[in-house]
Length: 136
Image (cartoon, rainbow, N blue to C red; front, side, top):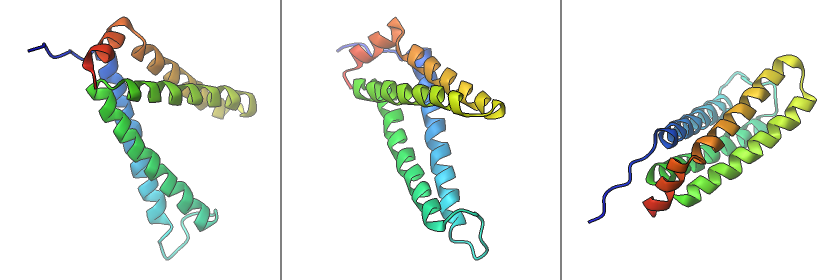
């Protein structure tokens, strides 16, 4: 019987961050959707647009839950999905830095730094060995 592969701390941290992202999308999407059904307007934007955004957030949250579970199990596909998403997020942050005012730029730097940190945590030799040996 083969010995279970121990998940490195960096991968565990990425799993936790992924779960937090999923929960924030699910809670935010749920609150947005709930707000569109209130008798008094909660949003100044078009209700249909807010509902589309809310449903999109809920779908993304569910996909993120699946990715978090895959990462925890050692799935190479989930790891690739995170690389892809973090690459897109870093690119969007760079674009935002060119377009935003100083106050909003701090958030874009945070997005960029977080994306790079997650990529680095999933790229360590220990993480690579975990995903290679997990066979999930």
